[in-house]
View 1 (cartoon, helix red, strand yellow):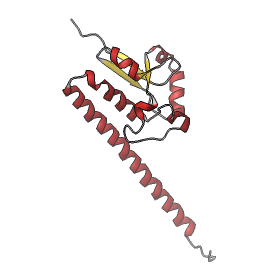
View 2 (cartoon, one colour; view 1 turned 90 degrees about the vertical axis):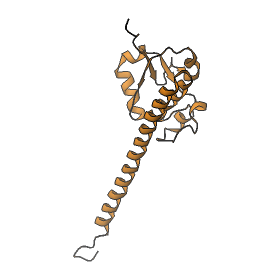
View 3 (cartoon, one colour; view 1 turned 120 degrees about the horizontal axis):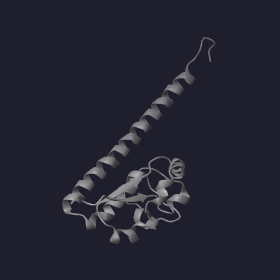
View 4 (cartoon, rainbow, N blue to C red; view 1 turned 30 degrees about the vertical axis):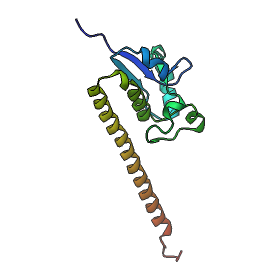
Length: 152
């Protein structure tokens, strides 16, 4: 017989989502994690634009589950931080980490590796963006500091 299809689990705070910690003990594996990735506003729009997402069981992370957990990849608005909001990469990492006690050591090791690469990639992209922003700023100053023929 074929294995059962993976159960979907939406990682997104909704009016009906449940705290991750209350769902983990009763979770049946395998699980397909569904995460919306974008700005805070964009993910709200994605959720509204795809009504089928509301049919998926949803979990959210409590602030106690995320405080200082990973690397603060992205800074959410303060009212969301107080609720436990983190970047998509951090949310997925937190969920996978929470599932770890129900997974084999090999599966946990593979998940840790994937999550580590994901977070490293996000950090690398942020560093490149900062460097590009600094470079743009230098170019702008060079133009502003340029003295024209009229002496200023």
